[in-house]
Amino acid sequence: SGCCRMYEHFDLYEASLDEEFAEFKMNTCDPVWNLREDLQFWIQDNHEGIRMGDPEVVEKHAEIRQTISQVKGQQNSILQQLYNEQKCLEGELSSGFLWEITHGGSETPHIDFAEGIPEEAFDLECSDDELKVTVLQEFIILDEKFRERLHFLEDEHSKILSRGTHGGWSEEDHFCFVVNYDQYPRELNNRRKLIMDRLRRHLPHKSRPELVAHEEWCESNKYFHERKRALVVAWRKGRSELFSKARNTFIEVEIAKELVEVQAEYNRGQKKIRDELYNKVRIWREQKLEAMMLQEKMDARRREEAQEQRRMEAEKEKKRRAHEKEKVQKFSDDRTEKRRKQEERDQERMEELRRLMEEQAVLDKERVNYRKEQLDVKISERKLKEEQKAEDELEKERRLEALREQVRVIAESDRVRMMQDTKAWQAKNNPSEEDEDININKPLFEINTFNSKQITTDPRMRLEAKLREAGLHNSPYARQVMAGVPPPQPPRRDMKSTVFKYD
Image (tube, rainbow, N blue to C red; front, side, top):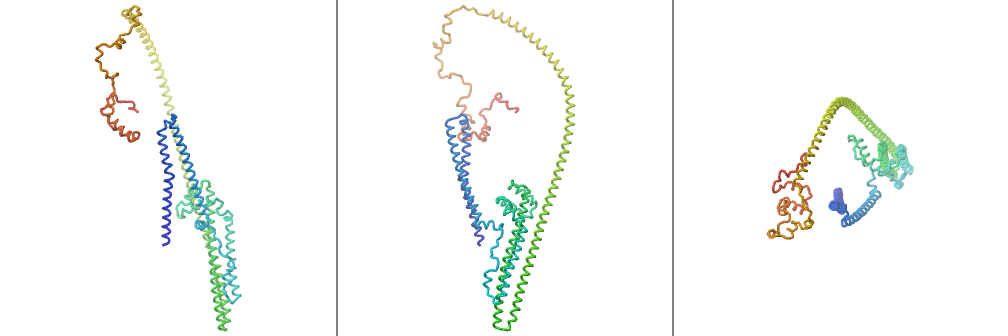
């Protein structure tokens, strides 16, 4: 069917939009994220060079900053282009046929027909001019009745109409309010609370009284538009029915005229038929007026029911607030009572601690006196030991000096011997035959650690080299693997560190 084809077009258009969005993201967002990751990796590797002021790194850093500035300029131009496209689309949606589609239901209905007697009614043929004038005057009477009802309706809602099409709000705020308000059905539980919470999030610059006042204005405005739309529809339908009735009446008059022309005895019946037709029109008018009055009563009854429903919702909201206020007061009282009891317990504990501290102070004073006496005794003993030690040192020094006198060498002054080469120097410059057998390939210093061959045979060294080639030597996985590889020989027990044993 046509609806199925239309929805298929909608699905295809939505899929094309998703593809365009994915392509746009891949061409704009993904390069920026890749550039960000590359910059983080480069900064991590060259952080030390930047800090130390390496010329090559600083030059590369300046080029990267220039590239980032160019990318920012490209992103700003893309955002400006998107903003212009958004404004163009909003302009298209707010004008012409699209505006009628998207806002047709919320606009005030207009009277799209000419008032008074329609030209088609003048073109109807009727031999009885008096009847034609009487029937055509019914259009004027009908228009006056509906016009009076329309003026009465506008006067009744003058306060609402005086606030404009958006209730004194901006178009964006009013549209946001209506969209969020219509999302919650009336049978939903806690509907009013949910609506207010949603509106407070979307319209934080509006207070709760302003939201409630705008809600009442929207309800009244909607009710006014519904009544006016129903009135205009009834007006149009009444004029159409009256035109059909007048056309049928004139046709019947013509038929009656033809019958009068055919038979003269039907002249008296012509007036009777005319009177009957007039009575029918009068009865129809009375019925129409009665139907209009009943419609007004029904509308008033619906309005009273709506007001009663709003009043009940307000009372329910008031009771809920009072109940929540009682809960808050009860919670505050309980918390005050708990605080008072806690203060009493803290006061008792403070008194007990003060008593214990006084007793402990007496004990500490006794202990301090005892320790002071002990310290005086130790100081006296230490002084005696030091005096004894000093005497022992003097005695030891006297004995050592006596021994030095016994073994001291007394040599004569010889300047030639002082200027001669030492035996070590002579042995170095004049090697003997015994030194010729020394191995010249022997290392200068004796090696007491590992050599390169022993280091390369360690499996941990080979594993670390492989991980470094793969670029994984700084990852947590590499540290976990290296910790699990055992050494070729178990370490000695005296080489095991105990620094972090008790951390």
